[in-house]
Length: 111
Length: 115
Image (tube, rainbow over all chains, first blue to last red; front, side):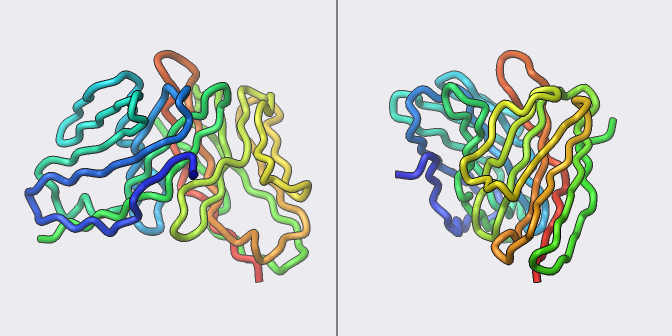
């Protein structure tokens, strides 16, 4: 089992729709979770961090964390073509300083 | 406020040569990380510094790889006797230690091609 798993996609949504991206992790002790956006040929860009169960909203983005089920998700409301990118989920392994990234989900927002 | 910078942005080398990359973190950040990323994969953790101390190193990092952060500011990553399998994007990230967590910010990366 991979430490952080994401569906590679592509996930295609029409412009203006809600995009839902999911991530599961295996380390039950993990406490810190992050979503990054990565455009082709560029480095990852931090979107959000989340540390507590529940929802965290920032503009059009909402991160959701459920530690009991070991999943974290990212919702993008009113999706725009400029949101088309790969979205990476990252988790800090408990007891370490290691960030483990998923392979990313490729999102395509269709105009 | 400048972000994380990396130099060079691109490096082409022949197999067997040594290469060195530099990372300058955000000035107030005391934590620095190196990652390697290949096509279709997420960044893969290589090593972590807190100030000048190297506190964690991936088992994937062979003896050919070494990293330093001598004064707790910039860092270098050296790869000795490069192999074609070392071709990848090498990413540096920095963060500031503090509650509630540790948000990392990435530099633009150094793309290495080993011929």
